[in-house]
Length: 363
Figure 1 (cartoon, rainbow, N blue to C red):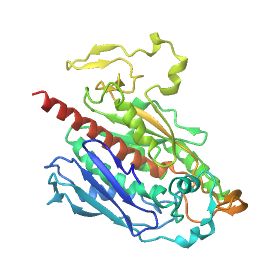
Figure 2 (figure 1 turned 30 degrees about the vertical axis):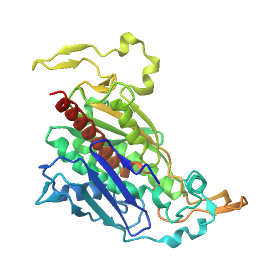
Figure 3 (figure 1 turned 45 degrees about the vertical axis):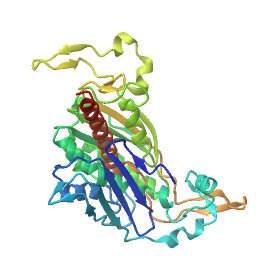
Figure 4 (figure 1 turned 60 degrees about the horizontal axis):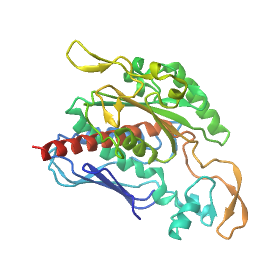
């Protein structure tokens, strides 16, 4: 199996399955001398872990991180960083009933077609549990960005038809963790929570949107052709399980605007910095960061496993009745927030280090 790595210089490779012994990640290309607080990594993992609230899957995993290499006395050494998490609460018998059945909208059929074999226990390698290691690696990336004063804040902006309409520049990011939905508005968060609980009660699932805001990222990062910064961010987000859509800046709403409305006009601020009066570009122009805040939306579909009877097909091509079982999220977006943070951080660090290498090679 290929495709288990992401990044060019700051490169992560994950391994492990949902119901295997554990999960792991190796980070190549992390600079030496970066201070790493293990508690920060664990805090990020706790934001993603299952069983954290009444609106997420009730699988009980502590997701305790174990650092194997690359960090000594709280500082990166420049060698590969290895981290693992051991699984503790697998209930593989919950999946015996789908051993020979293809679940609707899962990777069961496509895996079987590609490899001629599949790990049916929780989806195996295709399980969203793999993202725990992305979060661990993303925490290391965030430590690098913190030295540059770059901040990343993701939050739930929509669940079903309930949408937070607060403009990006008016979001109070300190409120993101004030509720279990991770929506920075108490009234909207309560409505979202009620919808998620009602959906779970009906044995169903629902989708949503995670919005990400990145501040203080320097101008000049990214490439102008195939490796555009927003294209790399899009790939990062769309590689997350259940992510079905990505838009940056004005996104799809730009199609209804004229160029005279959409153009971001330049000016020089009081500190002598080049800025734009508006930011429909989402902080990236021509594939390269322009120093303005970067912001984007990632849309997540309803979780495919529902606790309802559905018609499906087995490996013999026969129609069967499929009953949903196991412990699953009725809505994935509250737990997707730290994953979006992590993948954004990894992408931004990789682009920065690529630019550093280019600058070094021109000396």
